[in-house]
Image 1 (cartoon, rainbow, N blue to C red):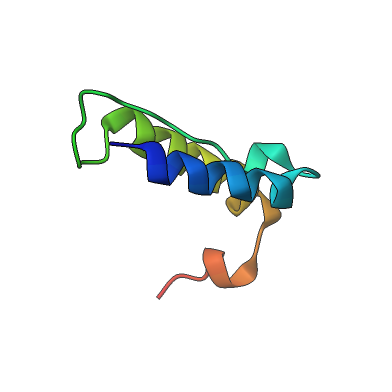
Image 2 (cartoon, rainbow, N blue to C red; image 1 turned 90 degrees about the horizontal axis):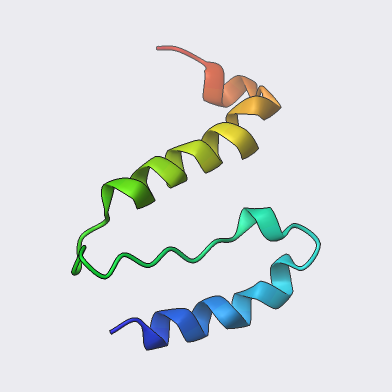
Length: 63
């Protein structure tokens, strides 16, 4: 059942009107309660495109 989650997403969309690429709703009817491979890959791509490309020194620091 995704309805409550989708309703939450719809409410958030207003907050992201200026940057709609920062919010996405992904549905995988076969994933059940798990995160699908596609969702994981899209999440990693989002972080790569929106966070790592900013060259934040804290994110790039190695231990």
